[in-house]
Amino acid sequence: MEKIEFVDVTLRDGHQSLWAERMTTGMMLPIAERLDRAGFAALEVLSPSFIGKCVRDLREDPVERIRLLAARGGRTPLRINAGGLNLFGSDQQAMVALFWRVMAAAGISEVRISDSWNDPAVWRLRAAAATAAGVRTIINITYSLSPRHSDAYFIERTRAAVLLQPFRICLKDPGGLLTPERTRQLVPLMIAHAAGIPIELHTHCSTGLGPLCVIEAVKSGIRIVNTSIPPLADDASLPSIFHVAANLRAMGYETGIDEESLRPVVDHFSHIARSEGFLIGRPVPYDYAQYLHQVPGGMISNLRNQLREVGAEQRLPAVLEETIRVRAEFGYPIMVTPLSQFVGSQAAVNVISGERYGQVTDQAIRYALGHFGGDVVSEMDPEVRARILDRPRARELAAVEFEQLSESRIRRDLGAEDLSEEDLLLRYLLRKEDIERMRAVAGPVQEYPGEGDPVADSITRLVTELSGLAGSNTVRISKPGFQITLGRGARSPEGSAS
Image 1 (cartoon, rainbow, N blue to C red):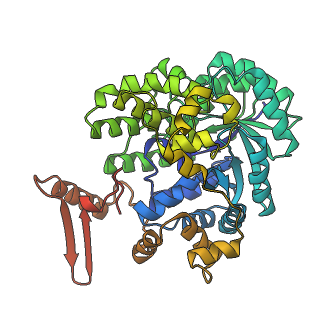
Image 2: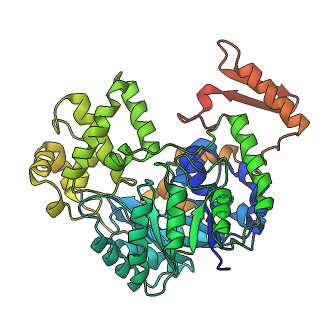
Image 3: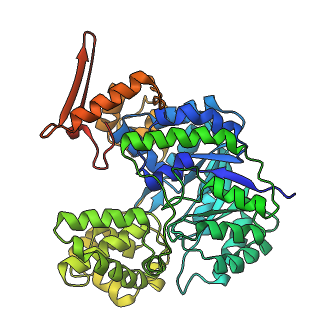
């Protein structure tokens, strides 16, 4: 039987899609060895956005997280999904190189390289920096729907990726926009032009079709697929390893995954979801509207919250409709971070203000100026671009010039001459105050207690009952030599404990 390889994304995209990046290192460590022994081709464990979340909200060291996971493993490569470290849409190459040195030293050996525009020039710069640090590169070709994103477009991007000689290529579908029919059409074309470089499939379940697209991709020649483990599968996340593996076995393929060893992983994360009130992923019904506005699921939640704050939550359907128009006028950018946020935010402003482009966000201005890449001069609606740029704020932002800086210059500007590379990276990406607060409370990682631990269960029940008392907003537990305070004021907007 022919074997299909699996990449597990539970510790990265699973909780990024469903738990708003709130999984702590202590939640990961108890099952790390099981994941390492299960037979996966790689474990995806970090995205650059996790760095800020770890430090600001979870008060954890993100690099230490990688080291601890690597120490619990050794058989399975640890992977990152990464774009760049952008300032005005351009990478500071000195800091990108430093980022990969730090990640490789901590235990990362693979990366999926992305660019919001699928720009081969940006792929080249980012892949070169990772390769120089000894990290194997997978080039993400991000899927999208628009008049621009034709078969010819994806063939051309596949050929461009091949020229970089990556370890693999990945057909990345973060919006869950692929259909079985489109998968059957597109995958053979990409394989035919991939010059023998293996292609992975990474597709989400946002429209309910993710599991079907995986089956069609395998039928069409793909032999590496990305999956997640329940309860961090389905919904806005990726297909369940159990469902995909069962279907592929029925089709006559070998999976090579020790699924029984993963059952305790399901139990572990299900216990956490129940204890913390985190979302449990479920299969979702088919949603045709997703193919029209293409707004990612997590972003829809953010838009709803923003509209609620101004008393306009009922305007969400109008904002999603306006998003379709704004995206077309912006030249059909791929609806991924950060471009999707720019489109959605401007659509919301247009709807709430009652005048299209009467008010514009700084991000929309910088987008029109080309700070975030893309051939905006030729692709944007010329009248819309002219209107966005015909204001004093646009002239201010246009005057800001991007400059590639040396590491020594960056150290000097940050007052970080004596910091280690690891600390310099955090200082470059985050506020000094946030790092200091993290360092002040970060100690040895405490592993999340398993279900059935009588002490842990009793404490959980006590804290839950106390926090539910009417009018209470703080729970304080103290004894000689020990004190802990849990308060609503100490929680992030998403609800992450500080």
